[in-house]
Length: 410
Image (tube, rainbow, N blue to C red; front, side, top):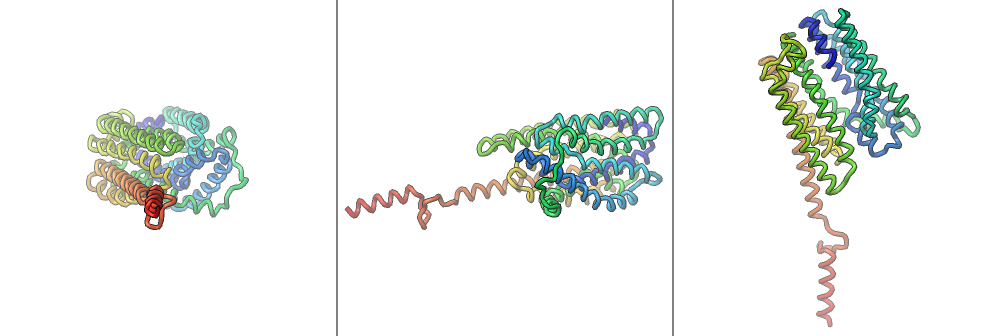
């Protein structure tokens, strides 16, 4: 946020498109490298704080394997998608954003240590980003920005290991077993990223540099706004999971209402103020129109509601498969929609397609939750109480029947 407006005012359209394309490709890479830990890690850490060292070690080694597998396809995508003459900038930016997948913030969330995120992630990124902004303003190369971002991403897990939790191999499961257990959450996160984090990549492959640049400005502002959704969802998750029964139900309701209100407020603000905000931050050349910001506002609302449905309702109830199915449906709708509508209608079409994909996810999550809730009610209503006879009569009916038999025999 600190550096991007500075860069936007000091680069060409193709340079801004290259930077945005690299961010999009790198964001996809980060989701692959994170290999599902942001989704399953916080509940595991919250449920067993004593195993934090083992969890951190397990995450580091599985992420290292994921990074090795992700490197070749990311390289190929960079070569194919980089704007003309901007391959080095696209590649460096991709590497910088891909390394964000090494972030240990999921563990800090699970352990309820927000200060750890501030110390190990926010502070290094802020200091190095501010340094990059000074260099660029002074006439330096914009390559300084992705280079320093790489440094901050590498520094974050090191600081976390030194000051918060030391990774220990003791009692760690076999590597193959860990990778198999992470397959479903990793696929879920990657599918979600295919049409959200990778939106600019898809637009860049199917549209002009101008359309890519304008959509990138709107998308960057949208991603910054989504920090409010992510932080709210992460803050509420331990609170929701620390309860059961009626209390858990009430907390899930409160969490959902909070996310609905956040989605309405944030989505409305983006829809009506996003164009002016993007123009102020990135310049008139890259300012999106009202139609683009409207659909991004709709997408913001959908993401906010979907976050609560997925993280506060389905996941705590063992609904990882349900989350995966809903996310895949959203990807199936969003990816072809982005290709088609961005090529036909430019930035507004891309924004509409992103909103469409997120709305499909919300509908799928709501349907999965309704189905699971109905199944639970059905099992409860049809369950034969302990002590019932073969005909299903409850214990009190058995007792009444025996009393009547004794009376008739006497």
